Amino acid sequence: MEVDLSVQVGELRLAAPVVAAAGTFGFGEEYAELYDVSVLGAICTKTLTLRPRLGNPPPRLWETPCGLLNSIGLENPGVEGFLTGVLPRIRRFGVPIVVSIFGEKPEEYAELARRLPPEFAALELNLSCPNVPGSARGAAADQVAEIVGSVRDVWLGALWAKLSPEGDVLDAALAAQGSGADAVVAGNTFRGMAIDVDRRAPVFARRFAGLSGPAIKPLILRVVYELCGALQIPVIGCGGITTGRDALEFILAGAHAVQVGTANFFSPLCVPEIVEEIRAYLRAHRLRGLEEVRGCARTS
Image (tube, rainbow, N blue to C red; front, side, top):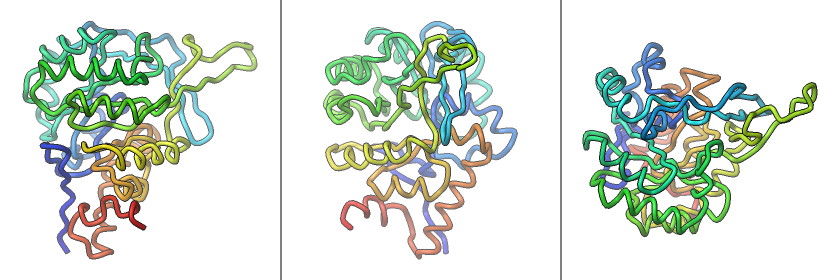
């Protein structure tokens, strides 16, 4: 039985419901050596800033039970380095590219949007990175509205707002919707920390880091469920997804698509496996597409 894995996220049509999350897939080049990345709905790039960033000092990763703490610090080549050095290499993948951007103030987000060509499938506004200065604004609805509005004024394409799962995420999501976002991504990591008992000091130079991985999936799933009941724009679920059944939970909660992040680190082939698990589920239940089940858990 033929099934249709495509999903509609606003005006953007994705061939599959799975997107590689920002910061966990690089620019796709390493994974393209392992499998055909065109099985993805889209690749979301590492977050870009106006100028190159070296990121935070090591250590940057720390394993926890069922999760991972990271303090990368948005290491990236800067927008011009991406456009001249990276983009020519990754166009060949044949998969939509979503560009993640971060600025320390609304004007920087807008300037980044001005510098990016309209060929990209969407811009994702990183409003929630827990380990760089200035990102705490992502939890405040008025600041979310200001940033989204500033980019909407200069960017005509699809615009996604990636929100923190902490704070009043519903208010932040409503602010993003009201300011012109086409979708919200819920969510980013939760702030956490680790202490090295031998050094008797925090593990990370910035003390706090972002917790991701399977441990946060039930928390993010609850956020997605609530947002899908309150917003008029699509919600993209992101947090702790490692299997096709995980992804289907988010879709049954109402999500239009999902992003896979930390699982790429410990299971580099997880994305094609997740896509195939979703396909097998649809076939087993004699369903032609995901629209037949999206949001079903809201009425049960």
